Length: 129
Image (cartoon, rainbow, N blue to C red; front, side):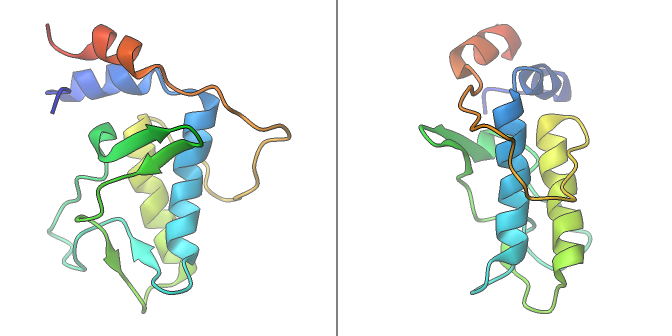
């Protein structure tokens, strides 16, 4: 990936906007409440296995906002409760944002947020030269 170190990722996270952070919270909620397959943002139930979903490179910026794009480190967890999933998934997306994201509510902002990260600027600022 372009972001090689933890410092590169922290720098990149500083470029996220309120809209991006909102989208990350919504991803955590959507996965935890998915009716067909409640999703844990981790490849297996094995606690020793880490996930790559903590890295910004696993997400895409689309016209409609930030989306999770790499599903190989996520799995269906039919026996998991919504509370357990939202807690785990929120911790995961909070690591992407490099700050705690409050996922206690899935309510959106009063007005639609459409100002998203400028990827070109973030990479120029944060990727190793």
